[in-house]
Length: 192
Image 1 (cartoon, rainbow, N blue to C red):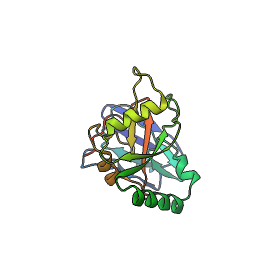
Image 2 (cartoon, rainbow, N blue to C red):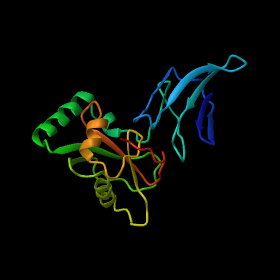
Image 3 (tube, rainbow, N blue to C red):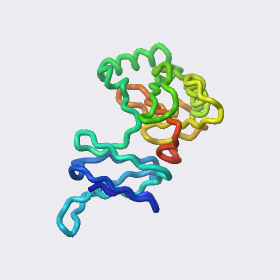
Image 4 (cartoon, helix red, strand yellow):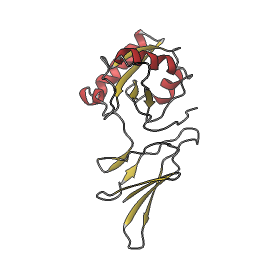
């Protein structure tokens, strides 16, 4: 059994048993995912997850017996091997040192339109808020509909520079992966 606690909100997910490992996500002690293995009174394994600061929904995804929080299936990573992605991001950074290579993908089960292209070269001095505006225009989203962008399952502050977000959260392949959704799936989590 997997047990999640988010203030007054609790979720239970029955499955094959607890994962062998789980991801730990932190940001300056403001956001943490702590997983500990316990046994109940009947000696059944229980995985306890605590110290969430999500306000809305909490999603559990099982992949290869690991517990991970995921929003997009990262089809770019599936379609291109790591070495090729690393070579491409290195080439881009050498050719355009003042630009950030960003991959933008829609969150699974989101009702907003698909974006017409996934790869972007973003000016380093662009703010997250300005980047959200670019995404809104590319998906032709009307002004009354909300859109949220996430980096590694966190909602970055709109005033942060994309270069700061890139340096802190870039993937091992050298790209920054951004997921967009019409719902604030993970609540407001600050990143410093």
